[in-house]
Image (cartoon, rainbow, N blue to C red; front, top):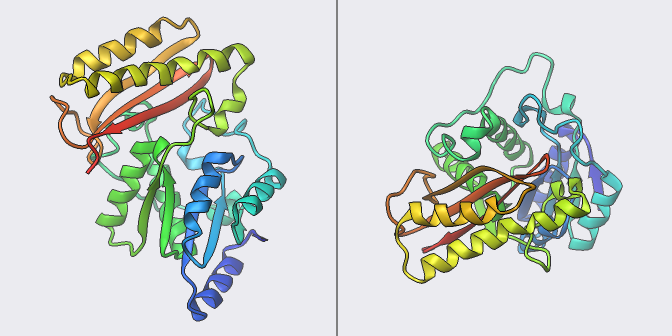
Length: 281
């Protein structure tokens, strides 16, 4: 497995692969890989070649967020990629991706207006910009994203549609710990006590899912029930609990169709997200 740090080199490699007729699967990440990322890589093995990008994108972090402390370990990441079957890691430095006078961004309205887009202003402007750049650099046939970041997945799908980017976007299921906590690089921030407290998120969402399965159609009642469970945990502070259309991320008045039930919760100082989708097409 090869580690590449420059745009020039990865483009040369991809060009040669395409001349040989290889299809390319792409897994964009911010590194500190876990089994969730490995599941994306394994799904991407349906292609002839698999590229994983590792880049902690500075422009998607807001003031006071955890850009400086976000976990980084390229040697560990290389092992995880090798285990999962990736062919190449693209790990550029920030100055490789953003020149000193960089001034072009990809912005979106609609799917970015609520949830994380509302509580993290500018976040999706940074996500769309870096993903668009990575797509242009890597030029894959397919790209793979985790459904834990359900809003991000919806946003990327919309960007690809709106900008006529010739890449197929594949969503992959959430990977969880045995006790139900969604895998996340940020789980490493949690103390032992906080790690136990974090289980309340999945517990509350599971309760909401059961309500829907039992016929509840009122989003407000479901949000209220999920909120009540999370508020029982002293270490938990809710950022948002929302029920929206899974494709447009717009508010719904009734549980009907493709619905996303999403939560962002601080456990101590660590912000965790989780969700489930019901009524998928």
